[in-house]
Length: 514
Image 1 (cartoon, helix red, strand yellow):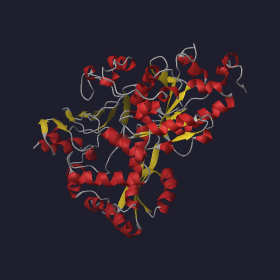
Image 2 (cartoon, rainbow, N blue to C red):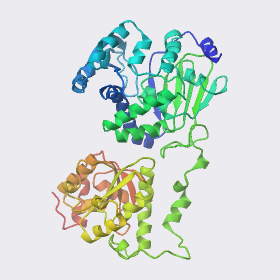
Image 3 (cartoon, helix red, strand yellow):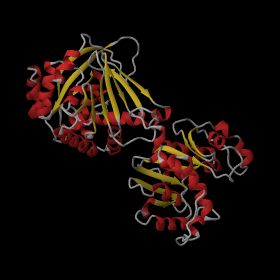
């Protein structure tokens, strides 16, 4: 049996616990690091939320004592009792989320059970007896996975059961396997806190684990983690390659590579999870799991962009849109509006590719730009604000199903639009910031930072003769990506630099400079 072969292949040493993360690019890190952090917190919270909501009897949480004390009140308020099970003194572990201080410090780790009052005695008794089957049953683990745990973790003392999972499915070689199973059993990223289930599935096709994953997803959604669930499913749906040799496992995804400890073996073991999903920020390469250079998404090619900028009209055209379609937005013709909108639309759709969210255009006119960005994307919800009542009336013609999403008001007044709603993307003509007093501009940018995860800024070529990047910098922002010469993503986490706006006085003598 292959299970015997890997056991016989194991070497007589075990590395200390560690996790190392390397990103394929700065863009990938900037985009996905905060999302992964939020998804990891969601996965951790789902452990106790499923108990609080009645999906299972108990949960086991492992954390430093100060954190346990901080969170205890929240658990008590949810009707759960905290049962300290074990105290461990561990050397400082090297993790992706807690950088090593270099001091070799040791910490007191509390292993605690969370349960309702009627199961407190049961979890304490099962833990003291080290009855792994009883513990697993209280934690809601499938029986097939409990037997798997008993064999590989208890009897054979595996620290990494990834290859053991593969052995319970089809293999492509003596030490290689391929899977495309459900994301509910994808635990390749558990070392960075992303896991759809709290237990170790017995195989990549375990149907019982998929049911457990569905209950965890439901608990997270009920707790308000809708966006995190979307990101989690995207991440777990990417292709991934796991390999292990000499006690080190490498997990490669399109955006990052993880190194962590595994079984110490003399030979290399390899598993590939093959899917067609791929993030926009993913690296290009010749080897799996990366997309090859020749498989570039058509919408990202230069010819596609040139085609949008210079459309060829069909011989038999549909009736032209009414004149207000472009006039509302300050353009002399529909063709010119489409031409200048093109880089903005391309960049916005690239940024928003693959996940849903709210999109707000600050100074939306009649919403034509939002219509182009959100067209065909069921998960995107457009919002707009403008002071032109006539244009807003036409916006309700272009967006008849959501007339309430377009409001009349001055977007430079944050109170007019920055409610409790959050936006995946805010869109702003950067020149508008330079036309208002500095104090008001600071309030506007502060509200954008608070409510918008990303900010797309643009300027039309005839607005100023200064380079686009210089205009963006003059209001204290920094471009992180560009599309053409007049559209880009701006860093919304930086600080304003009012001294860079001294040229306002020369170019806008009517503006009030504080």
